[in-house]
Length: 467
Image 1: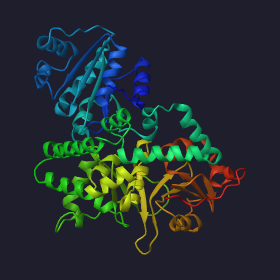
Image 2: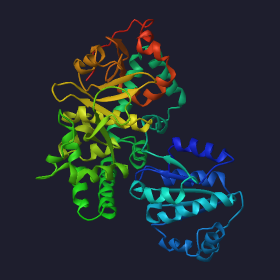
Image 3: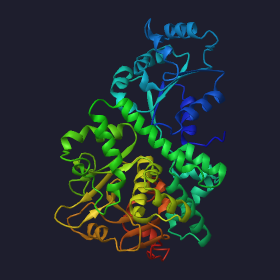
């Protein structure tokens, strides 16, 4: 089976090279490739891998019967399967589907103190059980959060190397426009990525076949699996509420006002009854929550209204898979995004921000039409981020930049279907550069960036967006 290179590969190598490494917990939603990446790492770096899946092999839940010390656990594993080998300094314990047996986290402290073996745990739906795991292993573990493929990993899957990404970043730094071939190729690749999403099973199918054939079936199976997880792990009445919220996300994203309205989910629905449902979906890694800021100023943390939010799918492929039959045919045969165009691009840019380490915030002023899609920050400034699906003026972003009451805002960033641009204190980048935003901002001189100095040598003005 084709292995897709992932960013976790580099993290795991760095983790192993740290002499003071702690047991590792890899968190993330189901089917994003956790097990595959960890197994491959184990096979390449250890003489023995003790792989235990608590869903497939529930008998291993008995290994802590005599306590959580390393020798007791090894003794009980050996009783269940005497063929497993425990070579000091050359063995990796891989506890998979941790959500089924969170108690094993108590053993991580003893594995760390013992020091003879490496341990990696992984599981989906961990958000739901993570408080118990955290309290059982605090101070004795490291965490890594894994997502579905981002656009960079998608480019790797398609055969592009790091030089392609470096070249994109250089274009952003210099505001040098992409040539016609680059714009055409990267835009086409990004549109494929939007339609497919980043779930490894979907991407692998596409790379191996070179067509969208079968991709929708794989996406829909993933949706079915996610709904099955909700029924399995959510309790009582919340199951129906969570499913209602999940099913309503595409409909509400397709509207001009993308604020998620609980009242539309079910008759008489109120926020206080559904609050835990939003948290549940977020903790399960199924959705990204974008909170409405109280006022567009720093700091971002704590400066938001938890009752006002937009909901995006954590993987755009889930949004695509939930569209109706006609939209699906049009999307895959003509790449026509229809009424979902704005929703899909906003979802993908939000997803790119989350995958690169940002939390999501937006702003909507109650007494006017002023609304801003996202915000990121530098050390001293707040930067509004606009996602434009079609030609049009970015009115809100201009108001924020020019308004005297928005003291932390000096310039903005706009993602569109067009080439590089700069004008009226707004940097314009193609959609396909969204995954690089954090790297770009980390590499620029803040003062020069805020003052638009990066545009001085390029003589570029923001072009018309392409449809």
